[in-house]
Length: 212
Image (cartoon, rainbow, N blue to C red):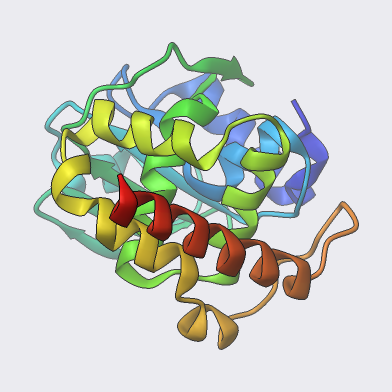
């Protein structure tokens, strides 16, 4: 995996988490950092963990504090958010099953791109950032088509038929993403290229959806 996408302190923090395993055993890393580890396309500086297992966020916060420096920000319900060793970290209980076996890196389970893709589609429907669109674009460039992602979305959430139009619209709505920061890229890619790609693809998929 492309470990250099993480700053040195994040690499050290991830190794510490992998060696100590303070989370439920089925906890996995997803989000932008997981995808960057797979493809090496951009820098990433935070950890988004998910687990299907119910956990006590206060107890997990205490475990992280014993393991290293942990500054708790939110610890309630199914969520823990804070900074571990100076790295932003979140852990959420997440009911949806993994579609593919995760990989292991530094003792940490890392979600497969097939699981990250539908989660990224959810993200752009909520409020897409440049990072989200860059990540989806990168997956397409690495062989996962948008149609593939829609199929994975349906397998993971079972909501494609009711949400297909929303997904097509979200892929072409980049106004809010325009206002967010471009991630630090490790490949040659501009926001203009990404934006042009999604506008064209949203039109194509929308037409396909209407006619189909």
